Length: 178
Image 1 (tube, helix red, strand yellow):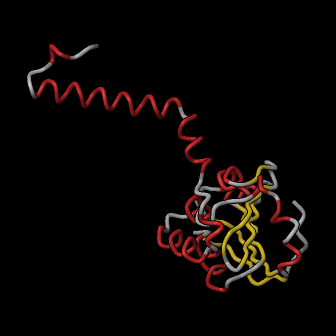
Image 2 (image 1 turned 180 degrees about the vertical axis):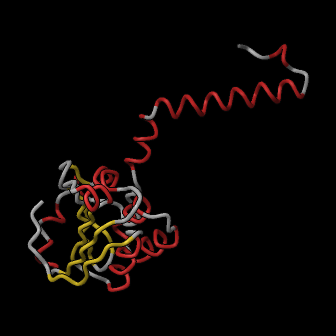
């Protein structure tokens, strides 16, 4: 993803990337943020995540280390703080070509959802998003859940255990099919 260098608005180390996402939303920023997670900050790792914004609403996500975009890029940089974050303002025309990359697009609230625990920020971001961007909730989350065979099996096992417990409570253990 090629994005021209914008005008630096702020450069900070933060515990919560939600601080930057909220600042972009409040400013109705068109530009981008570069997130360097803890490993990059403390261990010199090369992982950097870039999130672009249109009028404060996240549009694209890209991880420079893994060369992945969209929800996968957010997963690559998500983790405990601190984060080094640079926030840049950029002319909307400079982002137009990059914003055409569908494989890098993210639903409006997804960066806040993946990088913070701030449900209010997720809601505020979705409310600020244009209507045409709200229809694409995170299909990657559903696909990831369905691909998580261990997680599904754990849910099944808990359901079996609960069924056994209830059957014992109600005297129906003869009806169970092991």
